[in-house]
Length: 154
Image 1: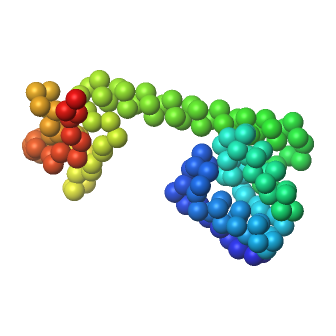
Image 2: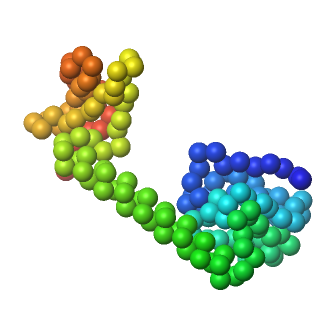
Image 3: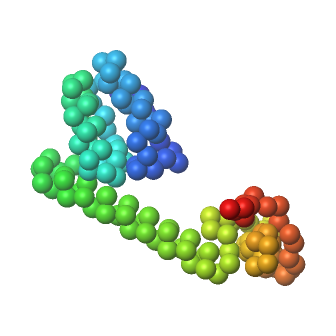
């Protein structure tokens, strides 16, 4: 084993993540002849990117392996397709949640936690001037929140 590389906090949908770039560097330098992941979708959640990377690495004499590889071209392609489909479902759910939050007057993508142990604060947009307001559930107090999101002037 040459190296143990982890991409903690990075998505399989993000091609230029540090761990994958390190695998590519090691391959180009001729220091490895194989890369192993716990699951196929840890390399990529895109069939196209997976195939392109397989080809690039094979040009350097390196093969990608995963513990859940079947060794069968069709079955492995199905696993790659399921991973890509799963990513689509996750993206759609996140977008639906952001739209629902925006329709309710909240600021999508903003979540703060109350400093106590009794619940989460919510951040809503003041309907008059779109200034963010934080409401603390345990005490019910509202306070003007520093505007990290500014309304468009266009």
